[in-house]
Image (cartoon, rainbow, N blue to C red; front, side):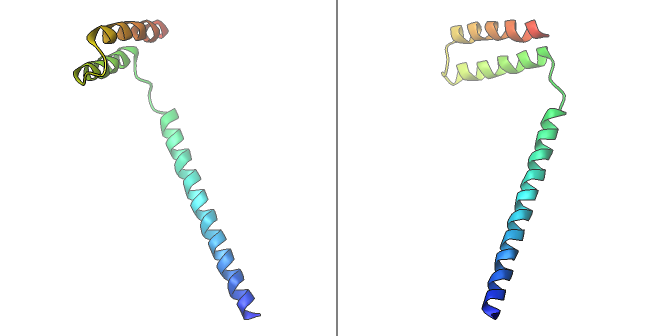
Length: 84
């Protein structure tokens, strides 16, 4: 009888620890989602500045050509600045 009691305590302790870990993960995920949702949205000019920096870095790393960067930046400018 004592063996069953020990097994029950072990199982319930493990289940409780799992529930606490799940709750902590849920709270952390909710906090992260809240910080993303309530963070200020960068303006169109700030977004375009970031795009330009990223494309310049890609050209420097020979990931794309300068011509590709210019075309892509123009396409994104139309979308980003068109929404602003």
